[in-house]
Image 1: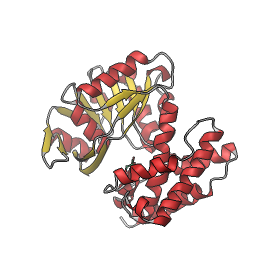
Image 2: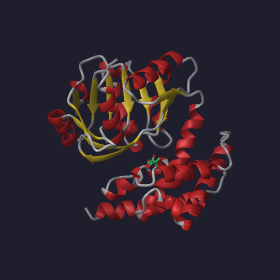
Image 3: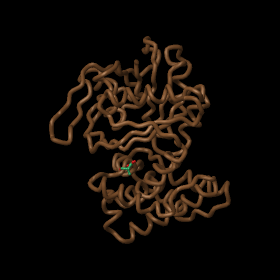
Length: 310
Ligand code: KPL
């Protein structure tokens, strides 16, 4: 199975490094510095015990036409705002057009963006709790192991799902099939709704969400609104989901959320597909979402201010 990791960020590098032990892995990234770093030195993973795993047998391309091998699986790890552009670019290329696509990204709308260009029957949806932080292009710190769940929004995809799960497991990644990926996406979304914006705006680590009472309350208010939107959409989630979000904040306590890291680096955030997506859906479904609206606006202010400083 030949795999292309679309987006050599933190998660992309980690997954690519693990999968390269059992299959041919290419990286597709639009950043020339990243592509050069991977092609000249490979991927470095700083493991949790302090050791370094060096992975040399990978190739990176900046231009999809450099991919001549027929590709079996595209794993989308780009930021959610870049999914549509990446899919538009990649689907035209014959080596990729019949590949299976798997999105493991944060936020809502990734499946829909992929389905504009790829056959919806070839798209798998998943969520991973692998923790990773990008230290430099091609260099990643492994923050923690966690399960990856993979499923489909279409019926009859069991063979593709189990083959992909098998590939992950062969590479030493804990992976499972999931029968209700819409619920899975919402569960991940709620975690990001409750943690990411607050940590991004305030500069705190994930664990402080649990420790600081005001942060904890705000997190639960944002999650409560998102639960109301989910319920109006017919997605049943436990009412006390904030407890689960707080557990994740605690378990990833020493980490800065991905949105926090984006803000720290002066990069665009995924706010529009996380809290912003709740606001948009809330408007469509007539559910008030003032907390998520304020968090979205505050992230945008900080994002602009930080970009302006660069
Ligand atoms: O998914 C995450 C993110 O930062 O995007 C969490 C789970 C909040 C871990 O940081």
